[in-house]
Image 1 (tube, rainbow, N blue to C red):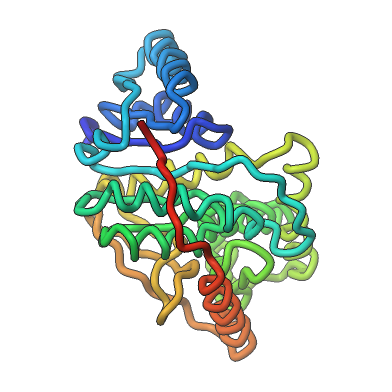
Image 2: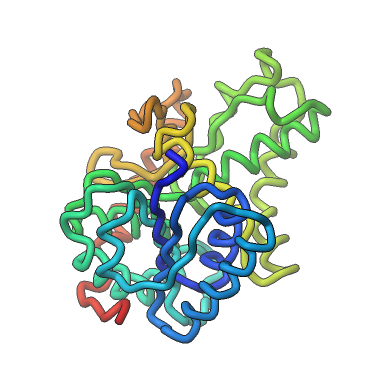
Length: 301
């Protein structure tokens, strides 16, 4: 499906990095870039067109508006409203009040969209649920636990001194302070883990701050997670991605098994402790969702 059409909403740090990754990988046949700032989106489209030509990528890049997204096979939402995040805990929830109105406006514009929607905007578990409920779209996935899981497998592989390809393990729940590391079902080369897991988990928890302190914002990791998910959601490859999907009356990270572009959410076996942590994350997300703003704003010209 190399002729797929993918739209990206948001031309900030993550949107730019994601768009660059898609063009370099030549994943979509056509890439549509949408933003609330016309000058920014035209400039980004021009820069990406230069990249496509210089790297012999087949991807055609265009600037567009929200109405044009209905012609896409997949839409990635990476919008971010300007705000100052002063939160010391639940940092990823810091943008909830600022991002919700713009995301709600986009959801209304995309009502009836039948393609895949991937939400990157934080707090991703809350934003994915809000978008799905307001838009009525049925193929909505939130990125978050996907990146957490990739980091987890990478760090564990380093401690175990093996290739990350032989590590199997998931991070589920909320993308943030209440992420649940599924230690009980993690394996290295099909065998139980023998390294000190507390050290791995502590490194995993420190990694976001390490990136933020050094470069200001996570960019490349989310872009890689989206790229991997798009390949599966568009039916290019089969596999598993940890994505935010419905869990009872909330949305949180769950392994989604893709076959031919169709995903089925399926939790791994959890110990009683892991289940309690997952349920605690669900309760917290349920409470946080009730406090989201209800108004919307204009997202695109």
